[in-house]
Length: 113
Length: 113
Image 1 (cartoon, helix red, strand yellow):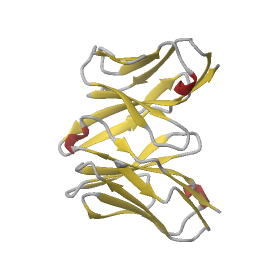
Image 2 (cartoon, helix red, strand yellow):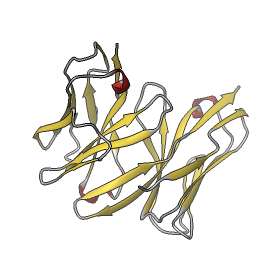
Image 3 (cartoon, helix red, strand yellow):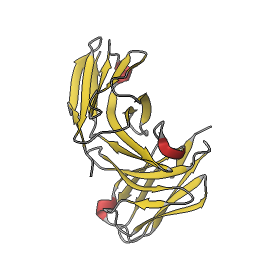
Image 4 (cartoon, one colour):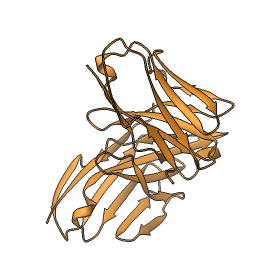
């Protein structure tokens, strides 16, 4: 089945630094999504991307849908302690009545105050 | 109001038992899902279900079965629990076609002893 390669697997950064993570796939997706998971909680949607080449921001977060539709990246600027968590990319192909959301393996972000 | 709610939050049980996890969504979504998150935090889809179609991931043992009494509920029933079933299980829902991604519950941590 489809698989997403997400990197890096983990990051340890200083508060205030910028962060970048990316996701690649061997096949194309109609939609790319980025989720964040806090400890003990479910994934929460951060950004959704619908068109190849699309660049979207949500506060300090910026994400792009790759031109080839096989990749996406997420940038976090000026990181703060509450950015700590696991970030997942997800690719979605939808058709008919149901979509099929495939997740990357996650990037664990640690922020040192 | 919680959009997607799961109960229980934690479940500890012995091998061989049968258990159920309940899920309810108040978003009016057409489709519901169950995901399994393993110890490495990898999220893998188990089932997707709407009132017309059940799609089962072929890797899911037949000891696992989804049961939907109505559109707003999708419960997960597990027979003859095994040690390897220990994981966090997430319920999710989406509108028809899942164009905007999924909304996740906060998870049920299942521990089989």
